[in-house]
Image (cartoon, rainbow, N blue to C red; front, top):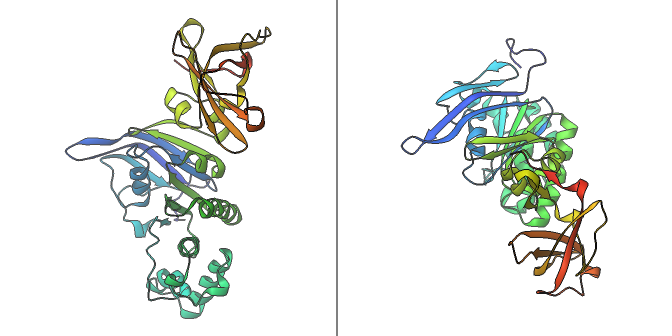
Amino acid sequence: MQDNATTGAMAVGLSGLTKSYDRGRPVLKGIDLEICPGEFFTMLGPSGSGKTTTLRLIGGFELPDAGQVTLLGRDVTRLPPYQRDVNTMFQDYALFPHMSLRDNVAYGMKIRGVGAAERTERAQQALDMVHLDAVSDRRPSQLSGGQRQRVALARALVNKPKLILLDEPLGALDLKLRREMQVELKRIQKQTGITFVYVTHDQEEALSMSDRIAVFSEGVIEQVGTPQELYERPASRFVARFIGSSSILGGEHGCAILLRPEDVRMEPHGYTPTPDEDILPGVVEEIAYLGPVTRCQVQRMETGACVTAMVPSRTARTLQEGMAVVAVWAKDVAYPLPR
């Protein structure tokens, strides 16, 4: 990057970032975060949790009330977007309708004064990377939503930035296209080695694409970790409930335990557990057929405690709502949540 960038520095460093809107209402409450070079890093959280504001502070589209933003060791906190080695990809694509795909991709280089021959070559290479080189003369109106998404990605890639910011870029696509683009984005990120910082509220998307994830809630980061760490060892009840489906029960000494539905099975009423098992006798409160699996919720009537199980659909055919059953799980799969 620049001469004053530190060798081996984090791709992104955030320290003590605060931001308020609307008469002083805090949106960020002191964000500290480090993102490694070459990572596919996702900021995940519900609407209003602060993830998009954090992305905009990294890109320079907003300025923090306090705190620091560094990119590869360089303090960029007060620099405008065009002075940061960052490209941003938004959900609305913002393509020029009157230009060909090649000209859309090359436009940023034209503004920077890159020669016509080099612009054309680099734009064609970028379109090739997203498998659109054969249709580079088409206009955006001639493309599907997924193809327009690829053009926007090619435009972000063409200048070979150190960092690409992606703000819910797949939100406008249908489920099938979204999953195809998830695979494509991850492939391109690995191929280029560019650091991707991705914002989404879709937990499945985050789990399937990310090297690491930061979970946001009400202006703070609840936990940072790999998808496996967040799913198997959540640091709080919020993370446990937000990442995947879960059941939270009162454990020994007032410590709550987390159960994932794939670790719970159903047995007939009267089942006797082994010494290595725990149970919750109750009735089937809800049955939801999901294709290969059926989600069943078992409630203990005396206490109101509930456990959710994912049961193979072929073995769930005999279950009925109101039926007395026993939810069973191995003791070693119950994860004690931090207090």
